[in-house]
Length: 327
Image 1: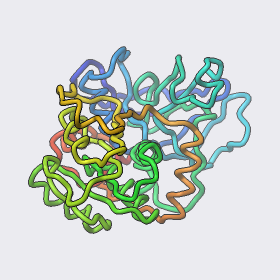
Image 2: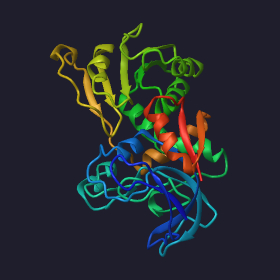
Image 3: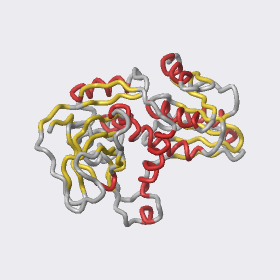
């Protein structure tokens, strides 16, 4: 197999040839056909997440086909197309796992962060955390659903049933969630980097009723705002944009420090919450919705060996939609 490997904090990924991995008990080996490039991959590469063990293969929006089974695997078979998400393993025994909150497991493993991920031709995954994808849809188009879509879905559910939804950071997750929200009959307000005409144009094309810079106030108070950009300064801006009783959802795994803000923009029962990871039920629910809503992802494909270029374009805000690696 071949993999793009991170050997040190901030280093460029290097292509390495490795022996084909062997799945252990309860695991499957997946031959990767597509892997989305997520902002969390940048946080891994830049060393912004704790306790990274090097070397590590990033990538956690994986689409591929099973080509080997470990012992004790049932319900999956060689040749089956599956998706492998960010949450790659949980203990099943801590209080969180036992109470339906496996996304908060005390001893989790994460694809592309604490276990090798999908910037490769093959990976080994826990069979419990593989989502059967069926045969409908293109591999490249499906890949962003495995994190941008899943975390986007969880954040939209946490935002509540409000009709006026603000999306701060209109990238991979934002452009998927906007489609779901519009399908649900909500009004979407898109906030982008100042002057980002491409992202604002995509937002309008996907049905947003308004698109502007993150510093702008929307033309109507928001029922909820979801922040995908890893910029803490957006929190007080979003709090000012939501109505009384509104909610601001921070959807990223990492964010720069939130600046001090006056209590009066939180007062009147506004809420500030965060999203952590996902559950398998999130995946089952979202993949069903994605099919019903006919979600269409906007992607730019790169060959596996150009992973560094894809990461650089994501870091510089040069991508519209999502980048996907094709081994």
